[in-house]
Image (cartoon, rainbow, N blue to C red):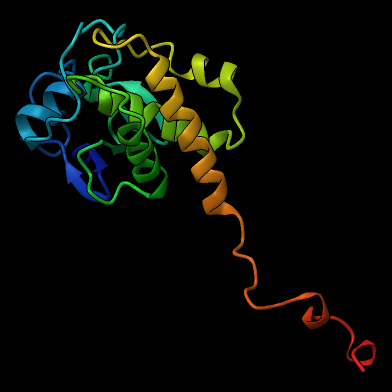
Length: 186
């Protein structure tokens, strides 16, 4: 058996301290601890450590998971994306900007989890309605807001992502200049 490998923010990696044929250290060590202690990635936050608050949300193979509940032995072959990653993708950047523009957070402790949960939702359901957004965010808790600003930011992000996916209109074309059969333009 080879050393467990996973991809972290687009980079190949071997679990720290891995020896060929064995998991490094404790196979029940959490991804949250591996990210923070071994890789210095601080966006995933320790909150409840029992999978209820969402402060430690990361994307594992494109799906939001609580890093506090993912143990080292489950990482072999996984693709992990954290909110620390500067080039996490257009959806993450748009969601982050929309939440900032709508003043969605006060202290920001929970923000990375909300951003990744929304980016994953809009990746699989680009036209998500308010009920779907609320369901996707059900595992993320914020102690500072009443959630109205977070929901506003999520709806703004959805609309911005929709606009980013639409093709740009052709500029300078009037009705008489519209492309069409050559014979119809005399």
